[in-house]
Amino acid sequence: MNRKDQIRALLKSIETGQTEAVAVVSTQTYIQHNPQTHDGSEGLADLFKRLSERSPRVNIVRAFEDGDFVFGHTEYDFGSPRVGFEIFRFENDPVVEHWDNIQPRKGPNGSGHTMVDGPVDAVDHALTEVNREIVRAFVETVLVGQRFEAIADFADADLYTEHSPLSGDGLPALSAFLMSGAGEGPVIRYDRNHRLLAEGNFVLSVNEGFRDDVHSAIHDLYRLADGRIVEHWNTIEAIAPRSEWVNNNGKF
Image (tube, rainbow, N blue to C red; front, side, top):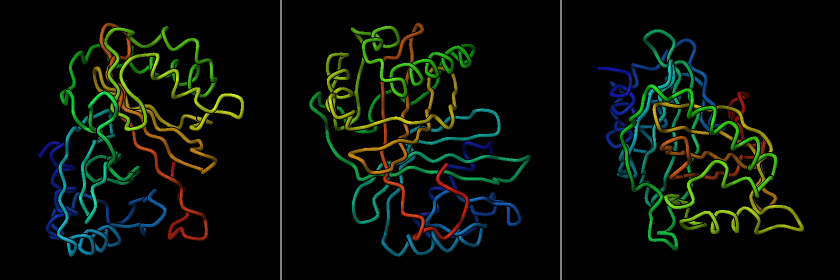
């Protein structure tokens, strides 16, 4: 199987608890960045077996590849519906590192969009690096830099579609949401971008910041067309206190 299909099989094994698909994970060097999951493939196999006892459902909505990284956008139901982003790093054949960001599923939002609907296949592969740099500039300028007046320099005013349950379509709604805490600071504050992964017209931005003063990881997936951001999905997850970590690798 190609790397995307290996990751699809790995995540699907959460439903069954069968450990065969976990063989893609390195037994020697696997680094786990979910603070509440142990390092090593044995820790992952134990987690999947434990989750399978809840009769979970897993649907991999989107999967993309960027060099040694495969990143996916996934629906889960572990007794309550959740949506997450999963990032895996390969080193030659095995997976050697993993990050995730999962939140309860909410919505639809005010524009009727769910957290996962919309296009799923990457196109415009020749523009991967161009699109990555557009999103980099948007994150640095608008989100981290809080220059909200510059949103229209990056996003398409006529086509912008929002999947966050906290906002709606169009740049006025996006601006209002980002500025909703103006005076005391944004309700969601972006402090740092850690990683940008891209395939074609999709770019995933991995960020650290705060939501309502809670230290959080914020993953944003963007779809671009003609050099503009036209669609956005995200998840926001509070970062567990250090006292609850079972590995020392950090969320990022």
